[in-house]
Length: 203
Image (tube, rainbow, N blue to C red; front, side, top):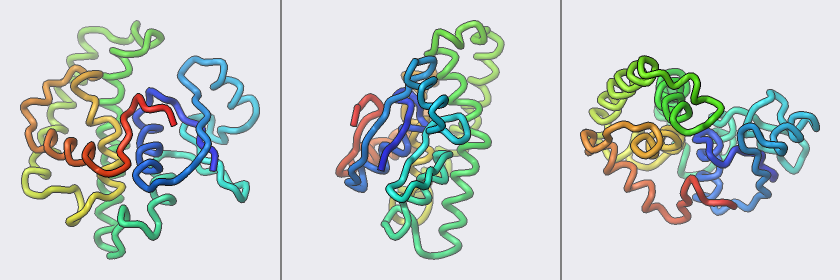
């Protein structure tokens, strides 16, 4: 397998993290934002939807969108429960992450991190994202206060999907994560899993 991914992106990191936890070998092609590598990958048709990540399979198929890639990789592993109701619950959290959390916490981190986004980082916009993010973190912390993992009794791709951006929301997004002890405990659990790699790890 060959993975085109953005090293600093939480969406790309989710895929790299699951591959590491599964012990799956693959070739990594790093395409950072605004880089020549990214433009080259787009021009060569390696990113069918024009965005990262993109997983190229040995049979020639190309998978895009981090959630779809996680779902594919998790088949027949402990990261995807067999029960259909639990599978639906996994999807609920993954949709929640992409539709509600990513547009808030990932955007705030991007505005604070990437130079080409700095002009959009107005005090008003950052405050809006801070308030919205804290409301989402309160919801997530409340859920994790009652159970170890998002779905069922084991880590699933729901946990991997949310961890991608949540774990760096303090350092990159500027959120005060100390007020969310259940989230911090959950992040520590994931970081303690065999095979775990950090966002900064280069495959």
